Each structure stands twice: as structure tokens, then as C-alpha cells.
Image 1 (cartoon, rainbow, N blue to C red):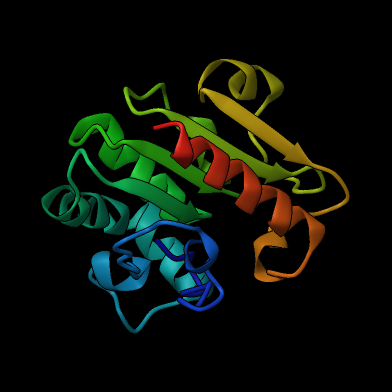
Image 2 (image 1 turned 60 degrees about the horizontal axis):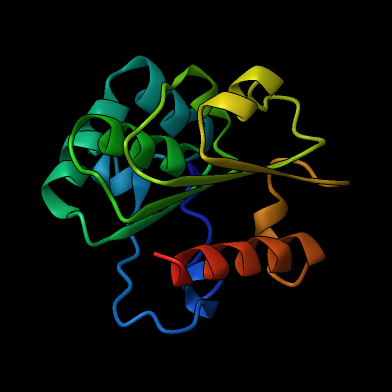
Length: 168
């Protein structure tokens, strides 16, 4: 599930480098929120002030099933988290730089979240230690670290997700 800028592109997504995936569906946050022409701050406002996130969550609830893994970037991870909280228990959920999770509660889905230590909007230490099953803090990077797929932090994220998936 993409972020508010429709990133990453399918070929840049971590899912493109995960071994043994038989089916990958790339989902667009703008499209699922009912605003395919919006991006950036305008999409953020639509999602969090005008009900667009709820539209995306309902759309996801109709598409996802319990044998799926979810991988979401930023606000896309928040949409997946809310779907897992209210509608569908996924096999596993991976949220990358989903800082809005700071307002979310525990979910029945196994969860692994990643944040750059330099992201000013990361959830509190208390949230990070109690709500997700596992939280990995990546040094020397901010919110958009996932946009550099060749970075060491993206490789760490990829390895952690691949390891977690192989155990489910």
C-alpha cells in the first residue's frame, strides 16, 4: 500500500525483492481513498480530515483476506492497520514509517513496524514497546528512508520482513 505520494512504485517496493511470493497486489492509497487525483498534502488532508482514510479502510476490508500479508508505507500502513484492527486478521502486517500509528491500538494481526530514528513524528517509546509485536528503529534516517531502495536501512527492512514471513 503506497504512501500519500503513491510511492514507492511497484518495482521500488520491498515486495518486489521478497523471495517466494507467489502473488503481489500493489494498492494505491489515493485510489482506495476515493481521490485518485490527489497526492501529498491535499491527499493527507482528504485522508485525515475528510474521511478518506475510512473510505480506504472499507475498500481494503473487501479485498484482503486472512491469508494475506500487508505491507504499507506511511499513511498506507495506517490504512492497513485500521483494516486489521476492525475487519480482517492478516497473516502479518509490516508498516514502514507509518507515524500515524501513534494514535492506534493493538491489533490481532502479527505486526512488525519500522521507523527512522530521525523522523520527528514517530510514536512514543511507550507505544513502540507495547502496541506492535516488534518495532525496529533504524539509525541515521528519517521518514522517507524507504525511497532509497539501495540503502542499508532498506536492506535491513527487507531482511527483517523476509525472515518474519518465512516464520508464518
